[in-house]
Every structure is written in structure tokens, then in C-alpha cells.
Length: 268
Image (cartoon, rainbow, N blue to C red):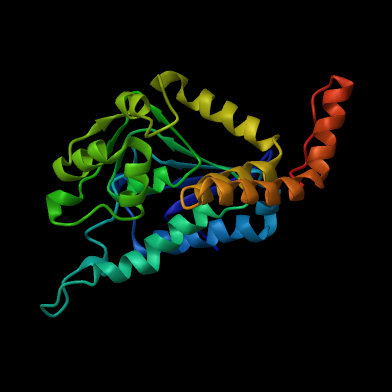
């Protein structure tokens, strides 16, 4: 598929997916969603060069990560006096996007280099690690146009920062600077702008050589625990430990530890 709204490359085990509508602050359209689905499905299925991916870096071109939904897109237009079915847009585009990121076979990093607003903020939060520049900010802009946080926003926010802060962010629609987002635990890390690219490269390289299956199972276990009792979670952990204990990467990790050398994980 020839991409016009995203850039997608895979090199050295690192898949880089860049939202590429910088003139529109990388706002989402139906066309961009179609390209995102194709690229993420290529990673998940191991199609073509994407088979070599061990980590995904999701970023935005230009001066921001994403301003959220493009309200000028055809799917959002009033037609013959009828308002658009925004719920259908959520079901058709944003729900599958978040679920693809949450279920991807490799760990994910959101590299937030500027504003992440609306659905753009939620898409970033759907990744495993969120790293932002000091000049970046997060904005739940929905209340300004009479909507609720979507794309998982009402799920991610209370979990990450607690109900009081989540309500404040959603109701007041104030920008949250990246530095405060890190202090609140909304994101993993805030770094100086000039150090951002090197930090993202270092994290991506680290994850690309890590035991991929164990990282993904960690994500799955963490999320499963939110709906489990302690007893249920202990059993859930045991099932994953059984599986991973039979994996080549576990055998390699133990051998490397015993031999006092760096492990060479394959992701299997």
C-alpha cells in the first residue's frame, strides 16, 4: 500500500510509524486511519519488511504529535442537514486503532514531540511507553465542542492520574504540560527537546533487543490485572510464566546470566 498520510519504515528491528499531515497537525482522517490499519496489520501479521519489527515507535511529523480528529474530514461533515454519526466514526476507526496498539505483538513507544490533543492524546496513551519533549503538552479538548474524551480517554485517564485529575482534565480542557504529565504519572518520561531524538532512539534500540514476547505478555498481564481479584491474577501470572518458561528467550536469559554475558534475545 502506498501511504500518503503516514510514513512507515522498519530498520534494525525498529518499526517507525509517523503521522504525516504536518500542515494539519497530523489530525486524523478516514484515509489516515486506513493507512494506519494497514501498517499495524503488517506488523501484527509479519507481512513483508514488518516481519523484522521488534518494537514500534509512533510519532508525528512537524511541530506536533496529533491534534486529534480532523473536523473538516468528509466523515465529520453535515450532509443534507443531517449531523454526522460520530459514534460510528469511533467504532469504525478509533476503537480498532486503540485495540490494534494494545494487542500488537511488539512493545510500543509514543514519541510526543508537541501537542497531543483529543484523540491524539488518547492514541499516545494507548502505547506502552509515552515519552514527550519538555515543550509538548496534552489536551483533552472534547468539552470545548460538547463531547466526551474518546479513543479510550475515559479509561486511560482515571487509571493513570486518578479520578480527580482525570475529571479536571476532561471538564476544564486545560493543556497539561509534558513535565507535569510525567510528574502525575500520565506518561513515562519528559525530556529536553534537544535530547528527545536520541532518547527515543536509545529506548527503541533497548526494546528491539529485549525478549519481545515477555514484554508483550507483561502488557497483557498488567491490563488483565485491572479486572481481576488477586487470586485470579496470581493464576493468570502463572499461565504466562509457564508459557515463557518454555521459551527460547528464557533459556537464553538464564544461560547468559550463568555465563556472565549479555543475552542475545530473538523475541521467541
